Image 1: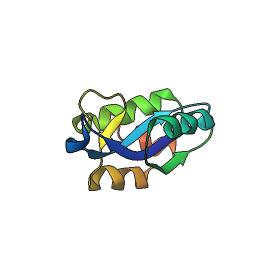
Image 2: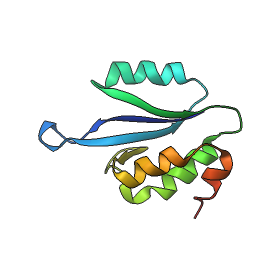
Image 3: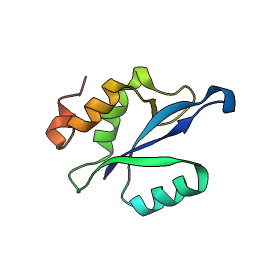
Image 4: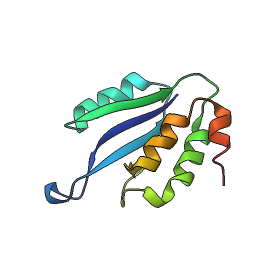
Length: 101
């Protein structure tokens, strides 16, 4: 399963940004437990379920959005209209494969 979770990120309280975590997991309940423990606020934007989605697809998305990576993070990307519009357009493996560079 691929997931997209909105949260805040930053080096301190004076420099917070809205970010989207793009990840892959076989245990989404575990991911949610970690977010509940580690993040004050978050919202699940979208999930893409099924065994057809895998970590290779996560890597394609990370590569595609690499210019938006939150410095010093792993899989967190600065939220903007392009990121949200692209996420909203993703529904199939084929949609993700079209983004491969």
